[in-house]
Image (cartoon, rainbow over all chains, first blue to last red):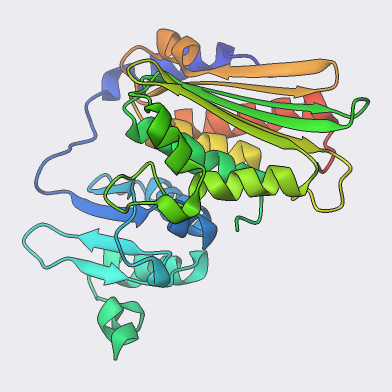
Length: 123
Length: 185
């Protein structure tokens, strides 16, 4: 059985770095809808993929969180990207692969992936 | 319908978090001899009145203004009853809510448990500061993950930190495999 012992070491290592994660206005927020509609259509793998990617690349200015029902159940899984000073971008019918494209092109590259947005879907 | 029991657990536990619970207990018990799989989700959130409980189990009396009310609970109930099981929900305003679903393990219509470790990881990491106590039992073996114990060791280090998050994932997967021998449930 794995015990909690390793956490002691992690704590000792992290001690000096606590408070590093800033939660101010300069943060980009990435929000995944995780109500019944989102979960049923596959939001959990999307959330994990985004959170893992942000973590792996150490992007401390991006905060991946979850929320309840956004009110557009037929378009789930939905990912909203809120960058400071910019209009919110709503990506619809996401899956982990599409989410990775959004991660690469939008979150890292600054380019909105228009083909996956709500506006494109509604056309 | 959800494809896995684990996703039903995620959905119902999300309700607990939204009901402002500071402790959510989740128990998954598999008994191959008595042929059942049971799931218990208990929280100390705001709870519901008797009338609200009735509404929650009926998908056609839902209101979209109350987030606790919707298809989540009826999905879970139906999944259990389809597998020759049972479902109950008990709640008291100001005290909390307890949801219990039992499935017949060998029933042909029982949906798979699914990625339960992944679901618990998602709940624990994305809902700070809500505390979770998760217990997984397979026949005579059990393991427990209690975020209160973790936090006592970690102090003010967040569960969201990469190394802690990876540890939690590993802890869940390793211990689950030890308890159930890596069997697909």
